[in-house]
Length: 375
Ligand SMILES: Cc1cc2nc3c(=O)[nH]c(=O)nc-3n(C[C@H](O)[C@H](O)[C@H](O)COP(=O)(O)OP(=O)(O)OC[C@H]3O[C@@H](n4cnc5c(N)ncnc54)[C@H](O)[C@@H]3O)c2cc1C
Figure 1 (tube, rainbow, N blue to C red):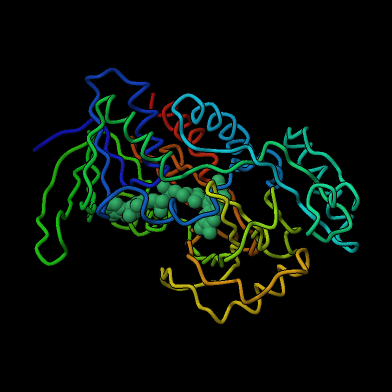
Figure 2: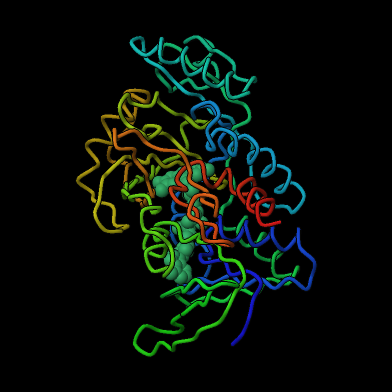
């Protein structure tokens, strides 16, 4: 049977970043296989997001999201500069209406606790000088928030990983894993669904970076206690694009609505200058990326709170992504989970659950953490 030192399941930005970091930290003789069930890398959540490099203001102090976001953002800007990955430190305004000013102050304090010290408070006049079409009582400006071409980032990381010896195989789905005394026996199906071929091989270590399917894959690992698999809640985020010249120069975020775990329907500018709004929050049972045009009325209402001049005729359904959310028994949104053998007791198995936003920003810091753990 073929043997690899490490197998990584899932070529989204997290699996690819883990492969690149592992390849860099190990000698060339250490063999790494990166498997993806789709026809190419990054076709799920990693290409269905806002492509924002977050500054790390929102997350609970001391959480993995807070730590890996700030560390990841610095690593990502450095990486993009070094490898010429398209990105722009465009800056963002978080805008608050009169009734939200206390919440804006609280957000500024949380950001300070997280070590984000460059936020600037803007009154209505200062905001309107920068963004004349935005209506709000005050705003926080985050100069370190940016945008990145997520496809180019993944392509670049994958190229670096492959140059360092990582073998990348797509159209190969991991069906079943057997845990043994010296590693794992991996069973896969490769090729088109109607004529897929079964293979099996052995690996010494295994990373489950299957994104929306991390729980499903974990459930097919014979020898893993299912008590260690956190429940998954699928939360769809829809986007609508603006068919008009960009009305803003910066990213515009409303205050996150209390009792929800999203950041609010914000305005993103992509590297081509196009504007899209989203994502909203829609609880779903199965993954489905179609955007329902009937959601437009809610978008118009939310956007007009900070951009009253919006012409609804210029708003069209765009794309959707799905967040792999984790909730506590009390219904609180949970932190990222990087689960190692000290939790589940299976040596060599590392599992990632709940890698929702800011996972793209945190990807290089997650890769680095994984490489340190499997050193
Ligand atoms: C609406 C939305 C907006 C977001 N906005 C931002 C943002 O602006 N900034 C930010 O930092 N983050 C953002 N995120 C979060 C970010 O997109 C994710 O954290 C990140 O893309 C997760 O990457 P991943 O590699 O874990 O998952 P994925 O990209 O889903 O990759 C997992 C891969 O595993 C493969 N796979 C699954 N099962 C198997 C199997 N059995 N065998 C082989 N392959 C398998 C899948 O096909 C998939 O390609 C957003 C997320 C959403 C949903």
